[in-house]
Length: 181
Image (cartoon, one colour):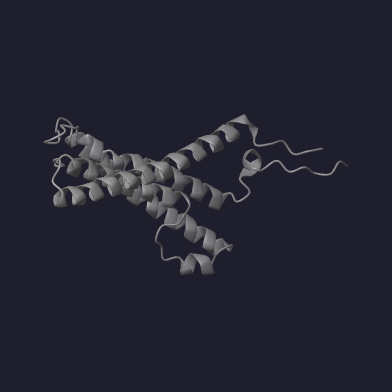
């Protein structure tokens, strides 16, 4: 007899989560590559003035904003962001350690809720504004905040749930065969 697998819903959820993780990682990489080429091109054009690259500053700002916030969400997912974690590590695996992890998660959720809301308000306030040269909508810059905030809220909720329910319940357990009796 075997324990039932995670089911189709959990499998689709895991696939979607891997897709989000890949989008965050590749989005950050593409923004970094765009920054590299645009800044190198800007330096080159200053020494050899062949074309005007005044428009590049707008794309540099846009790429930098998205690189920072997509990269932050990607690091948040894997818990690789800068953190002072010697106390949670020392208490890891204990009931007090789990309570501390949940408390830290709740504090992070509070911060992320304010961050996401204020980022949304900033995005909405920018509606109708355009950049001077390329005339791109300014909300493209600011929407990176609520997008990354929502993603980080999702990862924080997942981390809190996994801390509270380490086994994940029957629906989240991996399919492991058990010997027939």
